[in-house]
Amino acid sequence: MTRDASRSRRRGRPPLRHLLVDAGLGIVAAFGLAPFGIWAATPIALSILLWRIASVRPVTAFWHALASGFGWFALALSWIVEPFLVEPEIYGWIAPFALLLMALGGALFWALPIWAAASVSSGRGRLLAVAAALILSDWLRGWIFTGFPWALIGHAWIDTPVAQLAAWIGAPGLGVLTMTVAVLPHLLRRQGQPRVAAVLPGLILALLAVGAAWAAGLARLATPGPADTSTTLRIVQPNATQSLKWDPEWSTVFFQRLLDLSTQPGQRDLVIWPETAVNFLLDEASGVLPAMSDAAGAPLVMGIQRREGSRFYNSLAVIDGGRVLGIYDKFHLVPFGEYIPWGDALARFGIGAFAAQQGNGYSAGPGPAVLAAPGAPDFQPLICYEAIFPQHVRGLDERPEWLLQATNDAWFGRISGPYQHLSQARLRAIETGLPLIRAANTGVSAVIDARGQIRDSLPLNTAGKIDAHLPGALPPTVWMRMGNMPLVTLLILVLLGAALTQRLRRS
Image 1 (cartoon, one colour):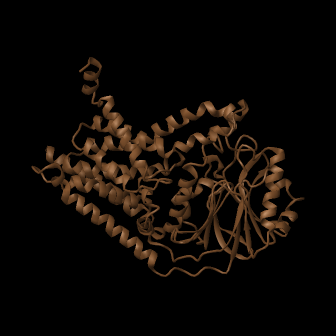
Image 2: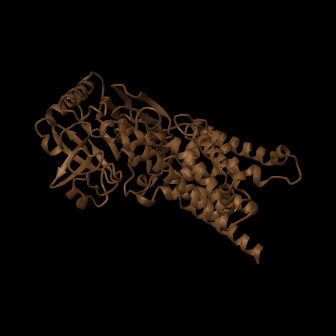
Image 3: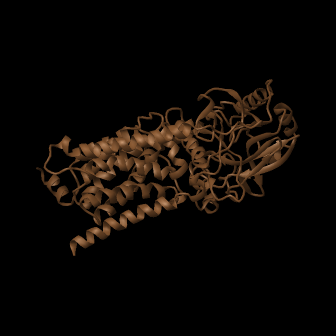
């Protein structure tokens, strides 16, 4: 052993080859997420990680978790490089640093809670404490630093019938199921037995848990669903390439494409265009609004930027007969993408938001709202990544009949980001019991029913339209009524119980 390796061990840091194994485990676990959907990879890889940190020092557990978390987020968030490649000559050099920082930042959301849990527990109690801490950290990630609940552990189940359980337990509950499956082989391990025989009881119980969850999901999917509404929607996907979207000549081409797709024959009671569908501001569009209404042949909901004084907003507008009937302003903005913290001060130095096309960034709207459009039930609008936040679809005074996500996923590339974004939209539908309509600039536009099943969709990088009946809504789900707090409270109690048990043992 070299002097440096010996010094690292005394500090509790595992050898580099061990950390590489941990990073590999994180990468394998991330294959459970979209677009791969190999759900079993997630609990299996996490189970191996639990085995590696079950009895080591807390600081060693920290390093194992940091490396595996880095692998998880490096693969899951690999799409983060795509926005910087839209104009590679300007921003391309930032891409690798953005992925590195995002992966390391995400890894800390694994490493710190695992270190804390390992510090206050031992033995089988540590397994439970680590599992609870990891899911609590996933939940907290949706709130702190404005929140980023992307690539949660429970998201591995979205493409399976197990996702239906989110109607009761939400995304954290799906994470609890994942960690339960990962923990059981170790929790019920029999001492003095060969390795396979020792974990066999827990492995069987884990398989039974997955089977029960799968059966429960299939049973929910098999029950008769609500009838479709009489409202026919037309979802327009113009396929405006991000690198050309704001080019004056190409903007004219894309605008004409929106008009042409809207004009095509077919029944429609409401036409929907995606986020920032046009390159002009709403307050400068009075001359063209009648032509847009004529092309739609029905009320139109469109993504558009607008100005109010010196402020700019990323908005959805309801247009009918050439008149603006309603406006929703995006309120959960992307930090450093749509606004810069302390932006008013930094704007004096020429520093503006990355994705905002007007001014130095967008201002935030007042919050979640319900919009009305003639000829359609009332709906809750969600612009782009607002749909990844479950808290935004709860707590409204008036329950909408459906959810509308207008988005521009061209920023996310074409490999994993758009598919992960779509899968999270499906989860919102399951949690709320509401259908979700998705209008995406380059895809994937989709009609998602109240159980998260995709009725119809347009693939990535395709111009086209969907004409479909709006699916019906289910009654409010258990999750809609109670949220995540009962489960969060239970996880906190598990942590406190593990810590108390450890303290009693020491005393």
